[in-house]
Length: 471
Image 1 (tube, one colour):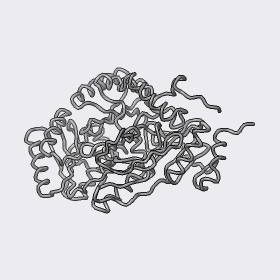
Image 2 (spheres, rainbow, N blue to C red):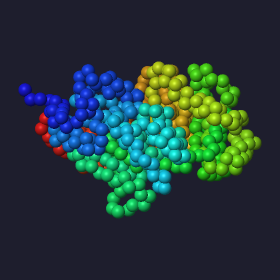
Image 3 (cartoon, rainbow, N blue to C red):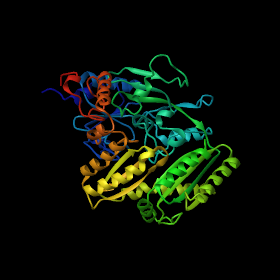
Image 4 (cartoon, helix red, strand yellow):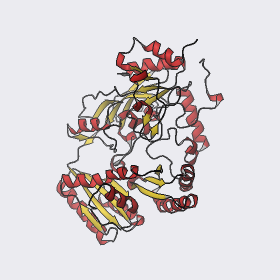
């Protein structure tokens, strides 16, 4: 009887990797079958390399055998990208956690793909610098995962997406070839820049093992305001006004719609900082380097918003405790939302100029599809990323309703969490056939045997784009 591909792969790697690098049977915990969005199939083999060389060894062997791999980091994704499917071996990068010495002159650091985001944030803070990306899963989400999905988070308005924080990558291709570009140069136009291809590719083109990350001066002032607003139109006008008046300071502009605000303060048992009953709520943050001057600018801009009728009430933090408490309310939104059942979650990007059109159109489409559905909305207004949550048992109908409106206004079905396995059927709502065909060509070039996260981003490749291999 022929040995399975998984057995053959394990046999090739035994003795070439340490015992901690190969987990089989009962040693494979249930966590390897899951991501934050649900459970897949528990893999029969988990590979845990400790460096780039071992990743290269594993990929070369898997590619020769034709063994599909699911690439895993902190498993905090919501689109199924790290959730194992039948026949897949897990390649976990959790042991690649080295953080190099920070280059203070260049303001960069090299970190392993398995390094938790929070560890990079702390390492930067220890030398009076900061890292521009921050997300709620900072303690578990890894640098490699952030790069694979081009994570955004709460401060894209100031620092940009993960893509803007990467100055170099080390990547292993499907056949084991190592591409290393960790110089961290601000200018390097020597031929093609390959790094951007792998950022946001969800592990389908290569496996990121290390990254050179851009750091920023640590803010000397962090201050946050929580505002009650009359409407979404007022929030958009306020955002435009603050971008002008606080140029270089504005770091976050979060919005919470009324049903979410009321539910969050009740669920988390928080005294509401502003009264329930407004049309919308916003959390606005600044990062600055001149405390006295920046404080004065912030306070003047908020006072102008009240005078102009763009806000009806405002609470401004005056201590680190108050700063943390206002952000805790925003973080509590997820706790409240996840306490509900029958949720259909949509991580979408909406052009700011069309946001009101989307809100109205989506509400109508959702009601038509399910009159009993409830809608909960919050997100990052500064970059157009909304978390649009529908409470309904009709998941497919809700996706049709919401994504149909996204297509109509020229938005994106995925702002932060990627396509994974769960949004494949909707990719055409955001990408043209020409774009999807080009993506497939890239996949076929970089991974002709389709061993890297197969069935993610788009369905399995057509037969004419695949390379046959013996099973």
